[in-house]
Length: 277
Image 1 (cartoon, rainbow, N blue to C red):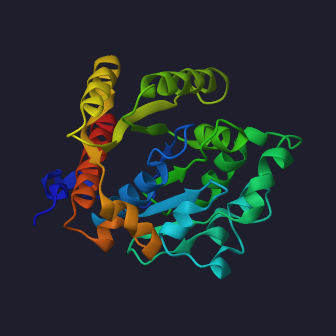
Image 2: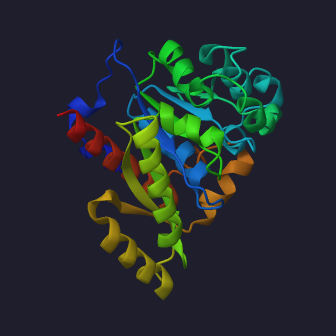
């Protein structure tokens, strides 16, 4: 089966070793919407077209690290130490089984970082400082944010060029994402004036469900072309893959979920190319 990535213009594939990476925060204050799944599989798809990608696991649950099969012994230096200034991002980053893809894993100490950051100077800029010194070898940095709007997520948004919002098609979905958009706007005004929404990806879509179709229609009507054409379907292979420590693209490339994430990566790269033009 040919990959939808193959249709992307060749210039979108090139890497510039001297350029700063594009930093995308994968964020939604609601849990269980496919945020980590999107971060891991989008990163894998980008790496598959020779993009050098780093995932920053900023969620204390560490699900992105687990989904990529990173054992506990390889998380001794992690994003907690990066935020606290005890280690550089390059010291925390470890290679994954996916070529071109590295991850700065989460650790158990990260759960207390919200409280520890409160009394630290420039607390909202800790990650941005870490990225500016260590991330130049990557084309893309994807930050897997926690399901909250606290200091960890604020650090991600201050460091990011754009936010990618996974949105589960369910009742009250618009209400939740509207709150997220208002918070992003406050961050724009106070800390990061260039922050934008790169796009909204609809997840866990079941075309057999009338509610899914209604919610999708409402979201597209409200946000217009900010919503990706690609939707991520409910797919058992996507759910199974993390227990094997693999992205679904490695676990079952032929599955509908894997092919959807390839399509999404194609859309993301085309939007990035349009922004750079």
